[in-house]
Structures are given as structure tokens and as C-alpha cells.
Image 1: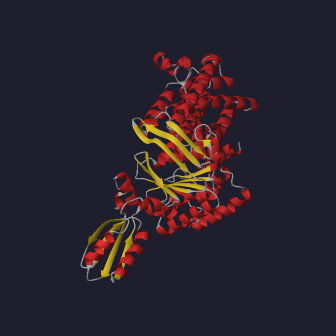
Image 2 (image 1 turned 90 degrees about the vertical axis):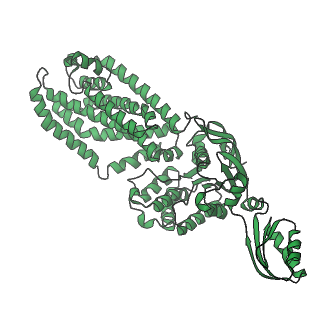
Image 3 (image 1 turned 45 degrees about the vertical axis):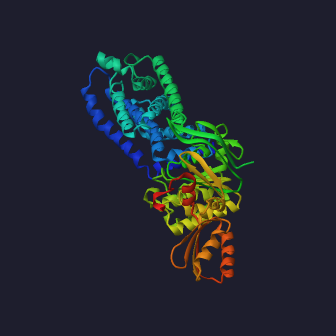
Length: 253
Length: 316
């Protein structure tokens, strides 16, 4: 276990010396909430206090970005030649993948620290219980998204440019066609039918439910939990199997 | 027990064989050099032994541990220096080595001293706090191999350890490799530099197109080329015909050519036993030897002899 923590810390400390990237993300969040969030909430009618809805949406988007970054990071490691080195270290494959997941989790936790605190303050629900429940829901979503990116990694072994293009395009669709910024019941039918396939729809509605938003605006939480569980388990499992087979060259034969 | 043993080891990419039915062994505490041109399967073999790649079929064992079913145990006793040092762009050499040493279980008490000594020896001490991405190609390569010298594994795998390194650096790396062997490590080196192979190898395995060609000591490989040694002679004599005839009758003579008035070129096997016989003949015939030059075959010639192809275009 010490080696797992060493692996996590080796990379993580680079992010913190100095933590420019993290501070920039926090700053972008604060500006977006305080300027754009305030403006847009004046324009949106039909939802009580859209400002709060929007702030949670931003937190979901940060979660999505970080999780997809973790999945992509692993693929980049393979391309940069770092993965063979990691695979040669005296650590079991399970622990190696665990360290990658932990690193992603730690980065996500760091990245969310300020946005989530601010969002809970805006909602007026800054308690340990709501914070912990919210973090769990976001991590749940994060695992699913990271798994999705890993599952697509087989494309990167054919062409990293194609992988980047597909992942970027897919990310745009997943965010836009979801309930991250608009409640499901207000979506036009065509838009809503696509949003049903976005994991962010379920992740964001589950998070909002935990934070006490009006359940009539949101997806059924049982569906949300079921979809997120299925997504996390299937994509992470598939991703790990694919990665192992591709990286270690088993599939190639 | 062999340090490394492979049986019918095969690695296939689609229809292409990177390795085909490879059987080979390395003794404990031996330096084995894999010699072959690019694409001969050297790196694939190293990566399979390092458990980074899985074989398509066949078996490979390191210190009696199967690389597929006991891969974590194998990784605990080996260290690998890759052909190209990549991947830690934003880390510093000293940090990279410290991390590597800690993950590989180098005792904390020895870690800093070892790292300092290796960095100084390989002339990386001044660059220890530079970011990896700012290192030169040679420095990055020396850092890659430094990991092995800090780790001091029981089984060390080195993929082209001195490519991109200048001659001075090469000598330092070679000295460290020999020191590692003195401490009891078994070492497998892949290279296409014949000088490196000749300097370091206890035995050389020649690979070509993923297949095993031959394995022996450098001396034996060279001696296996019939007529591979060339002895150039200049003799002060009036009767060149008698001398030429006598020389051609010495055991091991393949061909004698007369390349000038008193100059001969003899293609012989094992010049070390041929030359004393030649001097006896000259003495008996009152012929004075004015000059003598012996050229033995290089590992390039060995490769050419066994495969019919040149090892490396630039070494021609």
C-alpha cells in the first residue's frame, strides 16, 4: 500500500508546486459564478433561484473535466512511454490501477474543495453531511466518466489524434445534452431524449437531490443510482480489461 | 537453475512475428548481450522478461519465476532501463531516482548516498535539479540507466544502455555495469553496438527477425568463422613460392594471397595458433619477418557470417 501512496504522491506533489492549475480552476469557477451565474439567473424564469441550480451545474462540469482528464491521462502515459515504466515497477497491476484512480480522486477532491464549498454556501447547506454526501455522488459520477474515457482508449492505440477528436466531441455532446444547466422537465422533447443517454444527467440530478433541490424538477434518484452504478462498473471494468490487453499486447496476437 | 530461461517463446502482432519460438538461457551472474539489428526482436524479448508485455505463447522464467503467472514476484527482483527515457517531463533527476529507489525497496539509509554517488559518477550531479524536459538526450539516457545503478537489482535488463551517450559516458556506464555484475547481478543487454558487446559480454546471443541464431562467447563466435582471422605479412625472402606453399599447409589456413613482392595475406582460423607455426616456417627458410598484422573478425562479421546480412548500415 505504501507504494500505491508513493505513486500517487509523486505526481500529485508536482501539481502542488505551485498549485497554479488548481488555483486557476478555482478562479475560473468564482468568476463564472459571480459574473455569468448572476447574469443568467436574472434571465431564466420558471425555476426558483436558477443561480443555485447553475452553481451546482458548474461543480458537475468540473467533476466531468477532472474525471475525463484522469482517463485521458492514463492513455497519454501510454503514448509518452511512461506506462511501460510504471508496468515494470514491483507493484501488482491492481495496485497500479488503484494508484491511478486514487490520484484522480485526490485531484478531483482538490479541484472541488473551493467550488463545492462556495456552492454549498450559496445554497445555504454547508454542513458536513451534505458535503460528504455530495462528494460521494460526484466521485460516483467521476468513476463512470473516467471509465468511459478508459474504455475509449483503444482508439488512442490506433491514433491519438482521432482519440482526442472523439473524446473532445463526445465531451461536448455529453455536457450540452444533459441536465447540467437546465432541468429535465424544461428540455424540448428531442433534446430530452438525447439527454437521457448522458451520464451527467443522472450525476447532476442525484447531486441536486442530495442538496435538497425540488425533486419534481429532477430524475428519479433510483434510476440515477442504477445508471451511474451500471456505468461505473461496466466502463471501468471494460476499460481496465482493454487497457491491460492493449498495453501488455495480449490482444495484438 | 538458470537466471533466465525461455521455451518456444513467441510474440505475434497480427501476422507479424516479433519473436518466434525462442529458446535461450542466461546463467546466474552472467552478462548476456543480445545482438541484432533493429526489428530483430531484442526489445520485445526484454519487455516480456520485464513483464511489461505478455507473450503470445511459450514460456519465460526469471530466477525460476514465470513472467506471466508470477509477474509481480518477477518485478521485485528485476530492474529495466528502457531504450528511451521518457515520461517524467516535469520532475527532476534527483526526485525521479529517489522515487524509483523507494518504490524498488532500496533501504532509506543507503538511498541518498547511492543516488549522490551515481549522479556524480555519471556526471549528472549538476543537472540534478533541472527538470527532466530540459535535459539533453545524453543526460536523459544516463538518468534512465542510473535507475538501475541505484536499484542494483538481482536481474538487470538494459536496452541499448549507451545509445546517445558520448564515449566518456559510455566508459563510465560500462564500468558501472561490470561493478553490478561483480556484486552478483545477472545482466541482459540489448545492443547493436559491437564494441559494447565485445567489451561487456560473457556470452552473446544473436537474434535475427525474431529468431534465435547463435549463442556463445565472443571468442568462440569469432573462432567459429572459418578463415575469419586475417594475417598480413611482409617477409624478406628470395623464394616467395616456397614460403607461400609452406604457409598454405599450416593447419587452419583457408587461403593465401600474394599481395606484392614479399607481401602475403593469409585467411586463417584461430590466428593465435597459426602465427607460431608461421614464424617457425620463416625461421627454417631463413626468411626475415619485416611486419605482421593480425585482424580478427568483428561481431559485425560474426553476424554477417551467421545471417548473411550486415548488422548495422553505419558499422560497415
